[in-house]
Image 1: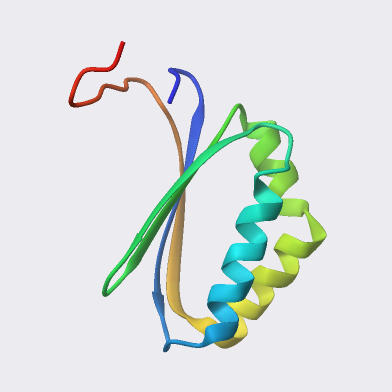
Image 2: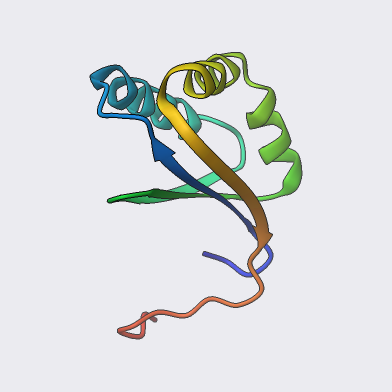
Length: 102
């Protein structure tokens, strides 16, 4: 990602393996991809899940947080799917890759 962009890091633990969760997660990611300022997404899940979405600026993140379908998914997540979660918003100060990409 580019220097000066932002990463939203979402770390979570699910209560179980509800197929409704996976369906909603896909819908919400598809919706996020259409939002102004969205740049990308990476995710991994084992005992805990780690998802990182990348955004152009803080204003884009704030608009995404207020999006009505996203709010509904958050509410269902708290009620039905997540044992716990943590969200951190970070500004990207440095980025590099292996192997080196030009």
